[in-house]
Amino acid sequence: MEGDVREERQVAGERLVTLDALRGFAVMGILAMNIVAFAMPEMAYVSPKAYGGETASDVAAWALGFILFDGKMRGLFSILFGASMLLIIDRAEASGQDPGSVHYRRMAWLAIFGLCHYFFIWWGDILFLYAAVGCIAFRFRAWETRRLIKWAIGLFTLGVVVTSLFFGAQLAVGNAADNPASPMAEAGREAVSYTHLDVYKRQPRCRGPRRRAGRPGGPHDQGPHRLRTGGQRPSGDAGG
Image (tube, rainbow, N blue to C red; front, side, top):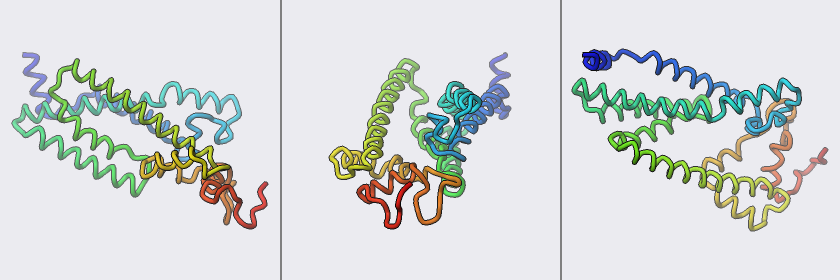
């Protein structure tokens, strides 16, 4: 009887308050971290000093976000995304609809919102990636838990390795400003070419009063310029 009532509620489309509350908490946590990228150089994620944070309150605010929110909220939101996907599929099947059509239609709209967000609002969109992953995850919905865990461990390990290699290549490029023709710098440029990191390293890193017309704004801007010009300063720039 209790199972029948629960099924009727799901078919009727009644929302799960607990799930919605957790999702809202995760979104607010993600926003708390994205605020850093809205106003500061991306290095402020790993060090408060990247944007002049020297006081105890600056360090405390950074530590609070780094320990309690950074990465945790994205993980929680991803888990809730999977849970919602299964709930929608179950409700579609219970109401006689095609679960595949319902799911892929939702992912298509999510992808559209993500692309609009990326092109018109902010480059740090993740909705399109959720839509792409959701299209793939649908194929895994009937797998056994043990098999899912094995695949998850393998994919997480692969992700760590690939990400480490890409960031290592980016670090090699960033440290090669004094010798852009070195083999290590060339290998790093080839490794990150046409990837997200290639776009990332071209983003302006310095915002605020240090930027002046006609010249790079500070150390975050000087690095890419020196890398492109072989370490030479632009004409008329005496440094300082």
